[in-house]
Image 1 (cartoon, rainbow, N blue to C red):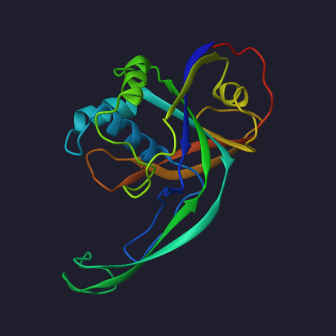
Image 2 (image 1 turned 135 degrees about the vertical axis):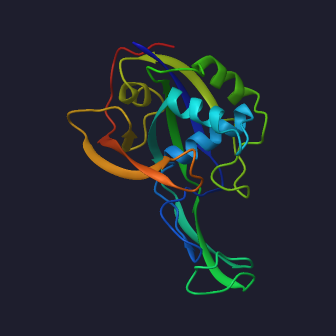
Length: 217
């Protein structure tokens, strides 16, 4: 049995970035590893320049996400100055058009557990989630929380069991924990700490929600 922190991500708007450039900023179906590390980093008060602390957090945590309600997609129109110079041949300081996607009324449950090389404990993360140093938002600053992040801490045999034991209603779980009856998916959302805005691939495992026993609070 392992300890798991369970978080609820609920907001009128959420935005979970995936591969993109200046023009279109699509939103992924669920919060990826980079987004969740950023969320925890804000709660812990880790700054963008603190690479050692970012590395320690990334090495300490593993994630699984259950999609409770996908919501409806919305696209917001922006104009942006100071775009990157190689954006379609534009020079710096020119104005470009951009489109940014959001999920309306989406809901997710996230399970967090400690890896084998833990330097930031689950208790430290729980304390930070309950009393965050920086204000947590769900993907962008324009996406405030509709409820507190912390839901509960439980013991379970796996991340799938932990997520399947609370408020069952979601249909799909994406976990970093291997499961023989899950579908493997490669995602490019693992942040390369020493190369800002660069991401490596990771493997996640998708499976349907099932009721699982052997869970206790």
